[in-house]
Amino acid sequence: MSLSLLLFWPLCAVVMAGALSTALARNMVYAALSLGVTLAGVSGLYLFLQAEFLAAVQLTVYVGGILVLLLFGVMFSRDILGAHQTPKPLPLAVGIVTSLLVLGVMIRTGMAVIHTRGANALSLVRSAPETWDGNFSPGSTVHLGDLLASAYLVPFLVVAMLLTVVLVGALVLVRKEGE
Amino acid sequence: MNCCMLPGPDLLSPYLLVSAVLFACGLLACLTRRNAVGYLMGIELMLNAAALNFVAYGRFRTPLEAGHGQVFSIFVIVLAAAEAAVALALVYSVYRTFRDVDLDQTTTLTGSDT
Image 1 (cartoon, chains in turn orange, green):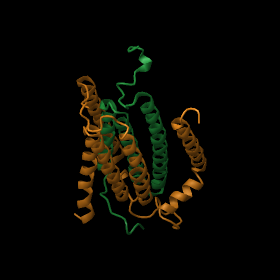
Image 2: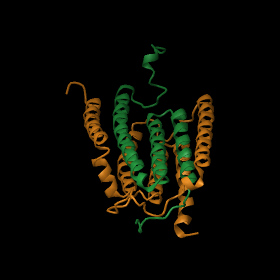
Image 3: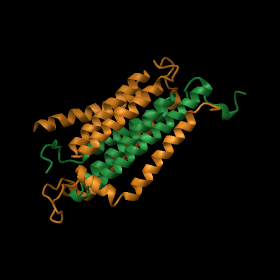
Image 4: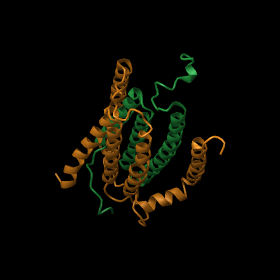
């Protein structure tokens, strides 16, 4: 077993433990920091999936941006330490049952996909395809830029518009009355 | 190609398992948190699970399709960032009105406490 595979399984365990801690930690700051661990771990999983651009985006946007925003948001809470954050028994039971059901359905669906497609169809194709012109490898940053500027140009522009609208909308929401 | 990247296991299932656990934890957070920011964290977890699934399925189809899954993930991440910005603006206005962000206290529209 190679060194990177020795890294892979602990990384999976850290991601899942961080997610569980995010859902269950009493202290909101701990929950936010666990979310940071999870997001950074998912960035590591992107590296294992040969998605280096996404790994960088995940670190800068999620860990660098959204997590800091959430930590700011935690400061609004009157009860950061979670002394009164214990969920009521009924929502807790409903939440645990629903989550376990969804987890079971998702795992079962994934196993069904793997079984029907066969192990070969979903294992990695190591050799470069014949049809590829060889300028840049599939899934690389160059390939992503090419896709965003050709096949996904319209969604790209729509998202750009959306970001502008979101910027203005968030400013309007936090504006003081009468300004 | 990709000589400097980490070689992962040639298996789709660990990624699907991690993604399913992330989604379930996000759902659990959304269903049990009474704090609005904790609820948001659950949503972020679920979006991240979806993005991870896109990348994993794209990677384990033919190599030509690896980029398409990643493009979808980029859109998911951008939408998550936009959603977080708007949601925190909403949390701020809730805080200005109620002086707290406990979702159990923001019950003006139920009319039960008037």
